[in-house]
Length: 225
Image 1 (cartoon, helix red, strand yellow):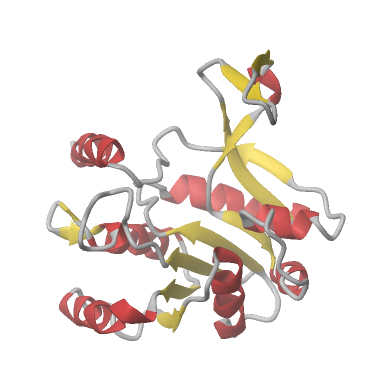
Image 2: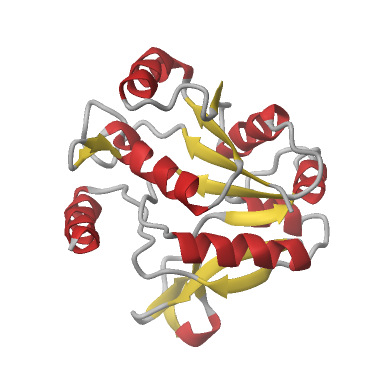
């Protein structure tokens, strides 16, 4: 089975309150995006496409050269939404048969065992996403701002990479864009395909806020031990 991965790196870092997009912020002397890419390169042989804002392409090229990653992946410009960015990433993938994963650039704490498990599961089930149970109580708001308690046991927090048969995902992304397409699973689901869940990783956090940044430093130190 052959694999490919699209790493979506189009964020501008507004919630991180940084001049530099969060994927380029350094953890232990290396941009978050580089930590993420290295995790995938260590897991198995695959084709990698990074999708990012055209504004940062020259900065990215310098990083590729500095860290010796020239020729190990392809980079394409993103689109106006995540949907359009992933679609551009799919168009850049040469893989015809196999599994493609779509991953957030700022989730650097995936590991080899986790990645192998989800990609292998997608070979059989065609559409697989990682998810974890909620720990906190949650409430649902109505249109008037009133809230009511809901059973957290029936909800899951979704992570990436979300992995699919590549022919299935390419077909799904031929659909017109809809505002409720917040991730790849929602795009595939719109075609009537069921999505299978696999156990996510507690450490697979998405670094989007200063608080996440502090947790990332803790996780990186733990990983180094």
